[in-house]
Image (tube, rainbow, N blue to C red; front, top):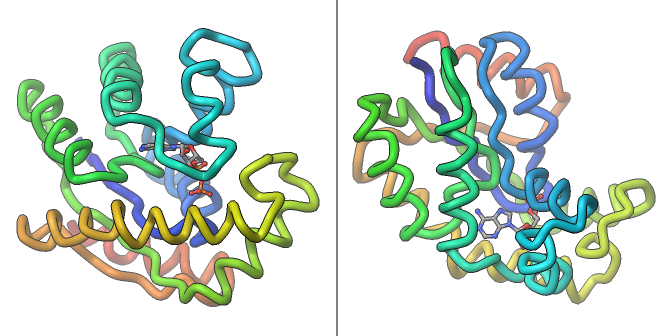
Length: 190
Ligand code: ADP
């Protein structure tokens, strides 16, 4: 089982790289932002609950996110592994994920963290805003809030994996293929 956490700030390229990784390694992609957006577009009660948080660029409460991920894991059978993208985003979520996977005896192998500085993140998200249709991409205020939430609440999650000796950092600036090759070389040595 190859379970990976792909980590990094908003706009770091997690979605882009995840798509390539799941194809190469035959993994299930659990992207909490995508799952929430699907719920939103289907107008489910979960989507309605998540909407106000997402549109402001704040985190959806842990219990909602954790239950959604747990469902997704439990509904995936005969898989070769999971790639978690946009999750865990708090220490609470990280410990909950460890518990879920411990019961199944399928622990996280490694966190792969994409490193991109703030100026570049803002540039990328503003550019994405032209086509993403995402409300949280649309204003500088929301983008800045997301980066601040990342710095305050999500960054400490990297230390959690460092402490467990499961942390690798990759430069997230460069060509998509170049970054992908670097991620693959780490994954192949896990
Ligand atoms: P990005 O990484 O570009 O900010 P995502 O698509 O990963 O965007 O997430 C969009 C929004 O969905 C977040 O700003 C947050 O409101 C919500 N969300 C996604 N994942 C989580 C999570 N693990 N915990 C809390 N909220 C989340």
